[in-house]
Image (cartoon, rainbow, N blue to C red):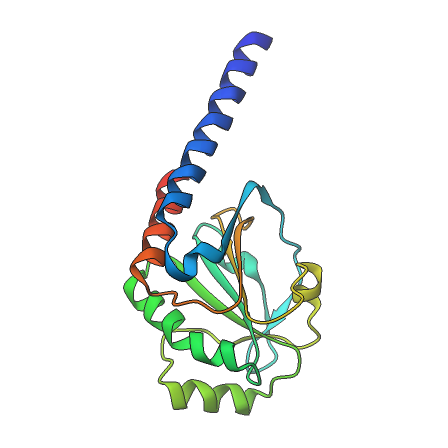
Length: 179
């Protein structure tokens, strides 16, 4: 029995490494900044709030691949990449693109920004005290984290990116196919 477990575990590890290698080979342009983790990282269950201060949770997205973006209204690179996140959600409705306004961001300011930029498909979630961001070691903005359907972090990109690019979509499709 022990030998069988060792063989199965080794096969799983080799399979995971093959998926990671395939995904790594798809990274081009901004996606070269995407760091793929060797093993999934647990994400803390820290609550978020919506525009009405109602409690929300990342657990709502379990079962889907998630592109979790930490941003702020005052962050120029964040503002620049947000339309590409909206276009990504339209292009890949099977995943959840979840921007989280981190720190002090007024609901009015977030809504105004979404309206000005034509952001129509993304939820408005907030981490007003930066509790989730701090617990996930987000030190600057923007930071985008890819979560697997179990809600674990599998990759991280620091800085802005064109999330609707062919490379980004290929990476996300390959990650989803490898799960």
